[in-house]
Image (cartoon, rainbow, N blue to C red; front, side):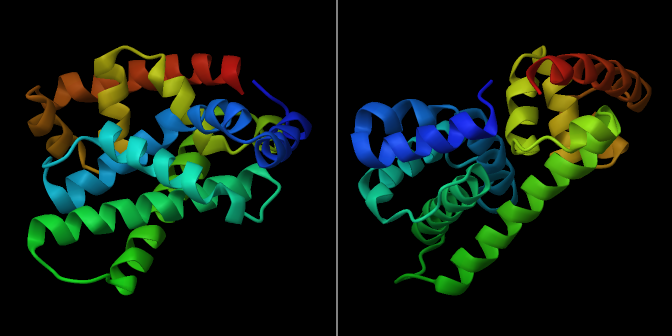
Length: 203
């Protein structure tokens, strides 16, 4: 995984070299953005669209408008990508619920929701997985955590996303996963142990 210095260089290269450098840079955030998109789809669109499609649209917008991106660091880039993602989700909400015209307040609310999801996921869950020294790392922890989650078995990933990113209770997780609450709680503990191991490898 790139260190912060290298990431800043990649961002600068994307500004000067164009798509050849921008494509790989954006690709490293696909898993992270897909997780956030999935949560917003669940809250607002009830599975009407696929998270991967929204992320692809986000990347297309990022390619179109990257010349206007003024940041130089990963946190600034991630925040910018979340804003684009929020605008894409807002467009879909308007499409499916028949509202006309751009709704800036909806976009702002979605951007705040995405920021909060990322913060909860990246800070609260990571704090339970890592030592204080790892918490001081400069990489965006929610991005690293999304990458670590992608390496887990599907049921491990699902129980963690439902519990920590969607904020469901154990009874709600059990209903969603069609399991007993006891089996879900045991699965969650195993999943956290595995995530702790994998996160230590990617962080």
